[in-house]
Image (cartoon, rainbow, N blue to C red; front, side):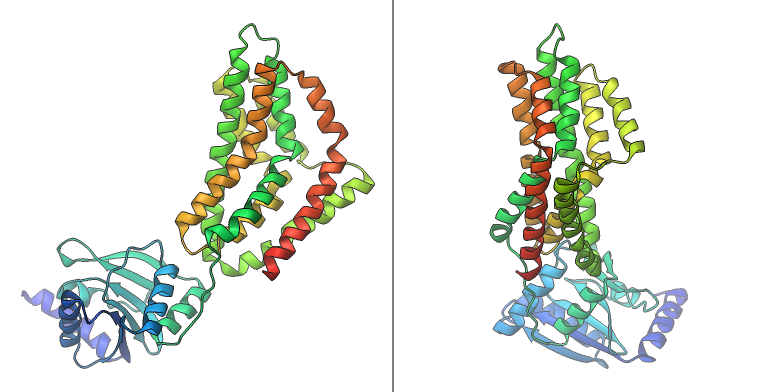
Length: 371
């Protein structure tokens, strides 16, 4: 070991010994490699206090599963170390890392909890830094051995409310009216297949754009817990507005500036490519018109146990949203339904749609809050 490396280790150890550091470890005594890894670290830092939780104990296993759920986007392997500095959890280490990596991770000047995982050649890789206050509190409780109960909504329990919210969003007159305008422009096209292809392109664009936006919002809601509770009020607010519309008359759902942009892209639609672009623009700009059920669903999905189940439900939601677009496109292409008749039907029944969606939003929001 050269002199520079020795000086570096001395500086690290001077920082370590000036602090009150404790190791809390979830491991499995029935796993011989796990025992060897644990003994290696305990011998390396023999002057520190170690508290070990064996996964053969049910309470320890329950807490360990809660730990995996909180850190579900990080692949963890035992032993998992929670390192406290002055009674504050600051570092989580999972798997096997070498001595040099262990010494390098002791940096207590970072905000939040640093999560390291043993990678190639036993080198510690920083996977994420947790800053959410609620997650930090839960992780500290888990590593302190406090039995906590994290209630997650599973995929099956969310399927019905997500589907109901998607149906309310699917009958949203905003995006349907825009599709009907686009197909009206192509109705007398010499090539009827353009109607089918353009409608499919529009539907695909709405699906993909909503899905990507949803994944982005889902990440935000999952990390900022307090925001979820605030956003539960949005569907109730829009539900009341929809009911008000039924009695007071139609209001402008999309800002005038957004409408001008949408119309600009609608006028350019002449083939599936321009139809796809119009679908993307529509999905982004009509969000104020359809945000209530979408935010409600995103709030619910942020409470799922894994990101995979959240993604599946979000995909199902968006498939339901575009189903009316597909039906309308097939109806106009195959059955030669008149777009003007469909547009008149939407216009005449818009007030009743607002009333049903408004009541549905309020009931579904109350169910989501109190369930």
